[in-house]
Image (cartoon, rainbow, N blue to C red; front, side, top):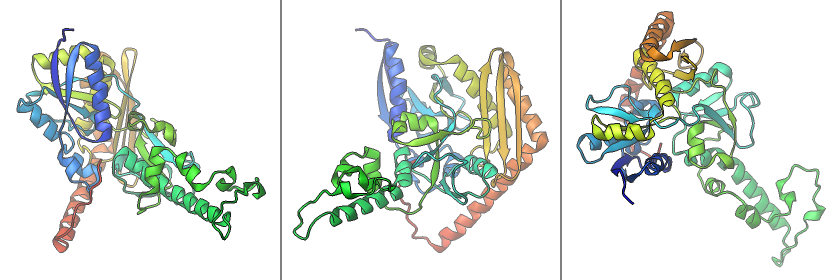
Length: 398
């Protein structure tokens, strides 16, 4: 069967990046293209003990992929839009934005506890400055601890303590049920069924282990550094990783927890030309393009990038785009919150005007203070590195 052509597209090597790239490839193949996905390691994948906001300042998860495109080695690159810098080389265009996935955040807990139901002083894991500020704005009592890694790594870190505790309890119960000769005596019936004791379900520790999901089995062997009561992830990443049905989570309100600009959206970059136009015709989703254009325009005009806690979310509603923006200080104590209906026909210029109004209302000051805080943190880190020149980066993927 004849194809419309062959496309070689760059992707990062993480499991989630490959799954997302496969979604794009599938759409292109459905429209008659032959697609080859080429894995490219990025600086963000190599410098693995840095927080996400530091990496984002230089487009560390994006730059190397686009360089391969500009050099002519590949036809395009597939990115998570929220990782993309708002500025890109003039020769490069965003050829296509496929239909957007879930744009919001999810609070994941071992047992399905809601944000409101978390105990006082609960430890929540995230390395996003935006999520940190939004969480503290709602729950100032929370302890926010850094959390990096692939989606599965983050989930393993969350699930590990409870699973390891249960494994130890079941192992001890199994020992008690064995006689001096080592013979197995399954005496579960004598258990008080009213007890909140999982061992009363009649399974041995081996049977219990066999019934665990793969993510739970991996968590069981993970070394625990921080015990998290909850973590916050992008819902789209949770779904695309195939792990959403293995964990309990609460969808956080997009009004209160305004997502990162472009969250849930994928983008295909290519050099400006015929190939880019073909990709756009094949898989571009106009509504998703309008919404993410509004979000990224607001981010670009406000500045701050990944340095400041900024949330921007836009939804097309008829002839207007409803745009919601939140800008916080780092501890969620001060904020500028606003929403506005922007005409679809002039959505980009209207978004820029909205940004200027937000700056006048105090957003510019909050962003400038966040930049000053970041500069101070960089200086402090440099002093620490001078003291510990033999420091080694610990591998932990995004």
